[in-house]
Structure formats: structure tokens, C-alpha cells
Amino acid sequence: MKTTNNINIISNDVDICEWLPRFDISAESDYSLADYFTKTTYFNEILKEKTWLVLGRKGSGKTAIVQYLKSRTNLDDTNGYKVIPLDFNSYPWNSHLKYVDKAYANKSAYEESWRYLFAVTLMKQLIHDLGDETVNDDRELIEANKFIEKMCGDNAQITNIMKQDSKRLSSIALQAFSVGGSISLTSEKNSGTEYDLSNVSVITKISNHFFSLIEQHIGKRKYLITLDRLDEEWTEEEKEKYKQILAGLIAESYSFNNKFNSKKNSIKICLFLRTEIYNDLSFNDKNKIAEDRAIEIKWSGNALDEMFFNRINFFLNKWNEDHPDHLVVIQEKSFANDNSQSSRIFDQISVRHKISIFRQILRSSFYRPRDIITYMNKVRDAHRNDVQKSSLYTSKDLRNANPEYSNSMMNELKDEFGPLKGRDYLESLMTTLTTISKQKFTLGAFLEVYSGNEADAKDDLRFLFDISALGQKVANNYLYRFDDPHLEINYGKYFYVNSALKASLHLVEGLKE
Image 1 (cartoon, rainbow, N blue to C red):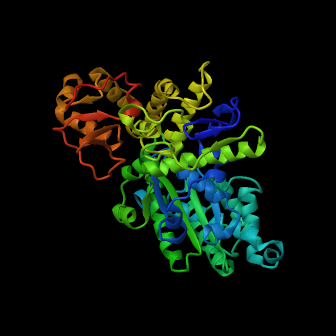
Image 2 (tube, helix red, strand yellow):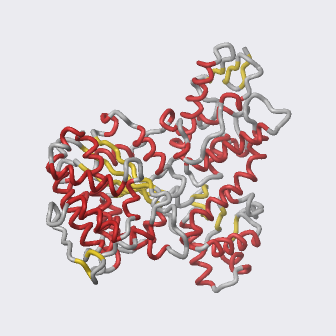
Image 3 (tube, helix red, strand yellow):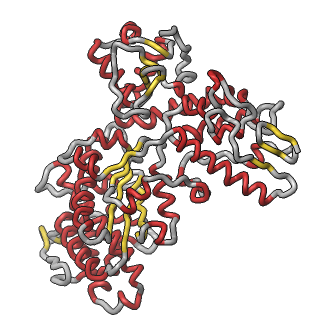
């Protein structure tokens, strides 16, 4: 048996790329996610506490939580909740704008439309769970089912209900519930051609009726509706109108959850939203909701190490089950000085400054799962291209992977903040950093190449500091906002560009302080 840094390989021909795959960056396309998902304290917050707003930066793992909840078929795993996931990828936001209550301003104008979406979503699921025998024995349930079938169809996404125009909505409602029936619709015509029914008046009556039915028939059932990828269609040009719709969603979710929280948590709405988008919204009780009902996903170095090592273990065990004659065995004790388990797939103990390779990867990240997975994928690509490769990853693979990884992180940053701040704005800031050419610089050095005044320069530095593109030294360490959300910027101290961006910006380290 050959031994290499506590990793015992029975066969010399088992290269790491044979048993450890390239991972999907997107949680939606990672079909093995449930096999190695890392449970965190956030689950208890969502399933057992009053938390209903999950915030986090892009790539922090929000969608992974939704996908894991979605995959649970045993209700014991979800505190009795049946999970109803609503995915807002390709959501008809422009159609949603039609459902505006003109009697109200700003966010309040969209609260009723979200209440309607929740009502139809829950009614559809409850009808399915009650079964044909119960539904067909109740006239009001028969009517509700008829409406939902015509609005949504059998296989259509529930979010498609917002695509219906006022003519079709009114027509379907009148056919399903009958004139003067369960929801007291009127058949009076406007101008002799169309029913005199505004979108909001119809959906309000439908929502009220559906929630009455839900309370009658829900019994001991519990439902958790998750809303994810609410930022997929955001563009810089349209963000202002989207902000009002999202503010309305948060307001309605707040009201909805407060109501059902008094009913033994039978129904819960849980939103998954990017932190920077939430911070960009403006509405009453915003800080109160953030304090009382929200959690923000934050990862420690140890948690990220566990997250990736779970993947290593899963595929290592899978390989050994399938290839008993070519076993790869990882010993229990890590060889790394800082006990980072994920470093054990590299063939040496440490890199510069005597830190483990995984800790070096963390230093070049924004402390998100996506960063670690992206870097490890780039390391794997570099390893496959090395004709003199060993059976494990090497520090050479790490170095060769860094430029491509850094470019990926730069593109991620532009995708993340471009819709909010403008891609030209970000490009201008990054060009300024490249012109400085040093990873470590002062406010004075920034002003020398900056095109605006000092006040604007400080605002731009604060933005880069807030998103952890820049950090500053505290004691003997460089810290970023992801290390400490309360970290305050000090314009009199050196700034330090996150190492994730160093290669992409073509920076050198700069002088010692």
C-alpha cells in the first residue's frame, strides 16, 4: 500500500479526477446535493422558529436550502411541513404589474396580488391533498378546482396564473363560480363589451373565498411556501418597479405569517432574497423585520471546510463501493496544522506562511460555498491538464487554477451587483484598482487615479468595502465585512483588495505597512 500524507491508495492508477467529480455551481442542477448537503442552524430557524426571511449574498447557499427542503419526502424532516417551492426564474414580472391596486401607493399597491398568489398556491395543493372523493362531495371545492384547472392547467407552473389578463381572469372566474355564486361576482358589462371587473377586485374576492375554504379544510396539515430566485429578472433599467413589487411581497408575507403564526404555524411563507437587494428596498418596518424575522446566511471557515469535505467523503465512499479492488482510503486524522479536512486531497501540507491549502483558498474567497466549489473545479481542470500530475491535487494545480478562478470571481461580482449599480459603474471602479496596480493602497493613491472628487471616491470605496471587495487590517489580520458585518471603514488606513480579485485585476502586493 502506498501512503501519501495520510491518504492511503492501494492502486497507483487511481487519480483524484477519477473519483472526485467537477461540481455543479448551480444548486438547481446539482442532483446529488441531498446526498452531501451540510445542514446548518438555519434549518431550525426556518422550520421551528418565527423566521421567514432568509438573506444572503449570491452564492451563499440560499437555493441549496430550498432544493434540500424540496427534496424531503418525510414530513418529520421538515417539522411536519409539506414544502411548496415557488421558483421565480422566468417569472412574468411585467404581467404582475397589471395587478396593482391604484387606491394605494408604493408597496401597498401590490400586497393584494401576492395574497392572491398565495391563496391559489395553497388552494391547489390542498385540493390535491384532500383527494377527489372529498373534493367532489363539496360544491365550493368543485368550483375552486374548476377555477384552478382553467387558470393553471395540470402541469403549468403556479406562477403562470399571473400571466392572465383581466378579460380571461374575469371570464374564468365567472364560469367557475357562477354569477352571484360563491364569491359574488357581477355580470354587469362596461361599454357593452367587457365585464366590469378590475383585476384587483376579482383577485380580492377569490383570495378571501379561498382562504375561507383553506381554514375549513386544512385540518392538521402544515404548508411551507418557499419563494426563491426573486432577483433573476432584475435589470438596472427596471429595478425601481421591481423594488415596489418586492416591497409589497415582504409586507404581505409579514402580515400573512403574523396571522397564521397564531394558528399553530399551519402555514408559513418563507422568502429567500439577496442581502443587497433587501438593503436597497425602502418600506416601513424594514429594520424591524430584519431584526425579528430574518436570518442572514454567513459561513465560517470551518463550516465551509465541512461543506466541501462532505462532498469528498460522499464520492470517496461511492468510489470504494463500486471499485473494491482500487480502494482510496482517507485516514481520520488530518495532516494539516489547522485541521482543515479538505486540504487532505492535496499532496502537501501547506503553502506560503505555513497555512493549509484550504485556508489559502479561503483567503481568496468571499466565504461562500460557490467560491470554494468554483476554485476546486478550477484546480481539477488544472490537474487534468498537467501531464506530470500525481494522484492527488498539488500546489502547482492551485497556482495554475488561480487566474481562471479570479476571472470567475470578477464576473460573479459584476453579475451580482451590475443590476443594482450598473455594469459601467463596476467596470470603472475595477479599472481604477487596476490602474493603482497594488493590492494594498491608501486613499491618497486611490484619489491620484480617480476621476471624481474626494467625497465620491469615499462613497465608492465604502461600496467596495461593504461588498468585501476591499478589507482593512485589524490587529495582525486583514478583515472584510464577511468576517465582521459591523466592521467600520477607516479612510486613514490601508485598503487591501480581496485576493479573489488579485489576478483578474493584475495587482501586486505592494509595500509593507
